[in-house]
Image (tube, rainbow over all chains, first blue to last red; front, side, top):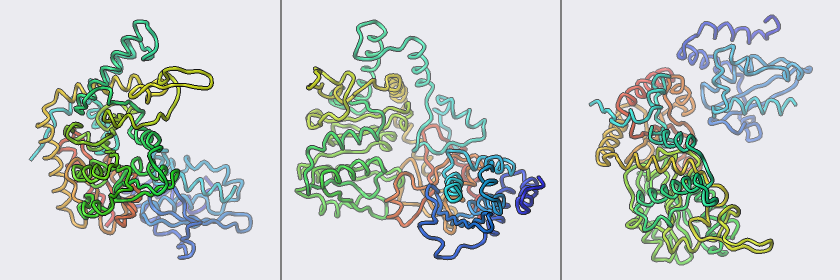
Length: 135
Length: 401
């Protein structure tokens, strides 16, 4: 637990106190507001992640060997899912990122169903794009 | 007024889903199955399977007879002139692809293939690709605000170069019956062949091929409460003669040599490989079940339920219906709310509806939307299902707004 990024620790704590779907949804929407904004020109076709039922953009930069991602979506709950994802992965180096079990992370937040293969919300496509960017 | 479906108990999955807290309102995607079908599949597999149209032994004879009985049942369901007009495929999409390959030889450079703006990808992409292969032109009939193909525009577009007209009977997004009589007449007068995508339409009411007058009609078993993996291509006797063979192998061949082969006519000539035997038998059992229902009572129930659905949507602020749905389904968007957010929150509450582009991306683009939420009804749904949906919708909108 101690090597969790600070934001991830916060997310874990917040979602642990939100057992019901309504509280989880509210929380996701609040977290979605915390996403660092993308510039208009960053919302480009190149940065758009296909395979999502809402529009999702993802950009990643490496600073001092650590990855820093920013993301945006036009759907609020997707913004929330992106925010809790980025809370966990931002600041990790490529090795740590590759070792990361994303399913486990979402499960620990009570959000495992959001990654199920039948879901067209695009979180799996986002993870795929992240692997392409860092691979 | 509370509406009960007297047929709900015939579909065991409804009780199971209910026990799991799931309200199934996605029957336009695929329908739940009646016990009669489940029994038929179990019976077929339990009592001995065999391949059809091949061996002389008794299990094969039994399987072949059951398989061919289903062909007779489908022919009766559609009031086709003969069972020989019924070709089994692996789905409605495959049936449309069969047509796009089987009729390819009739299309020359500069010829026109006409579809409409509301087509499902399955009745768009095979024709789009056919047009590309033959340097033909794909013409798209516009729709009006109610979601029906614009007949005046159709009259202007259907012309002497029109070879094929392929249109849906009932839109899977807009829920409107299309003016088939007029459209088919327009195409006929220009000598074009006509294809009707009945994937949605066949589920609601009975449709008579003798009076409909299209050359080909396509349906999907799994939307009609039957098994998946089975589709039906109806072809009028003389129209089937126009088809060239498209898939090869299995018992579709009459005489085979290393360098040469001759093939059976329809239907067998278009059922290459081992067909979906159990599925076809299951479809037959499903049609037996459906044929035993009071058609008028089913229609009354579906209409009353659809009215409740439309009334409930109309009563909610900011909800905008797509087109003017007449039966079975309603697609809608909510002002200021992303369909993905709504879909997410309905899912959380155990409401099984569809959110997205409904396999009709060009239509969505045409409507200026990137998606919508669709509620679709089966004969087993009742007003309690709709109440659960509306209460979940209200909760979701309260959270989102």
